[in-house]
Image (tube, rainbow, N blue to C red):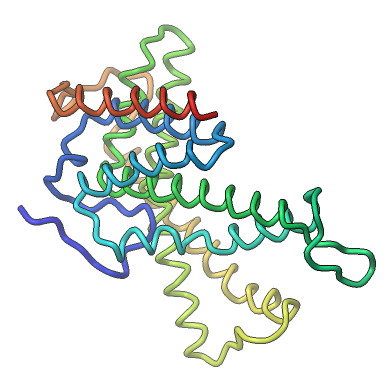
Length: 267
């Protein structure tokens, strides 16, 4: 089976396939993602980012992701990169390279630090995007439920958390798709989305109201569908595909452990 690709697939939308990353156990992907992201947030040197970059490259190859898909994941958070760099340039201490009115100084050290954190965010965004595109939302839910291993109220809380996280992962890409569809529909009706910041902010109101209404309608449909099927959190559940570990999962665990060790060494 060939992996379906589309250049307009929203960030985080699951794409069915049979790649190595698709076949990994969702529990391994969940724990590995938490460990890698935690280690990535602690990285303080460029050499530590090199280890993180290695994991991202391996994950992209395992998912057979194209360069366009990786670039799209990086571009998705472009405004966050800009805000990060600007804040570090204005607030970072160091040697000023540009003086602006009102005593504002842009420092070289702040600029480099902003670029470092932007690169860190970009790598983590690509990794999370790859994992979300290769893991079905039901897989995340099953992973959280299987790893809870708790009893009583804690188990019920874990089931609620897994259900909420699964629904969020499933409908977040649909939310972005709906927002884009409404945006183009409003532009076709003559909505002006260009101009200054204030005008652009005002133009969001005709987009937000239909989006909120559509989201609430979708929530109501999902609730009615689940209730009509007799879904209950406190009832025992079975799995059509039980989770099983394979040799690919062992290799993935080894990669995660090795990368985490390299990142810690290069902190």
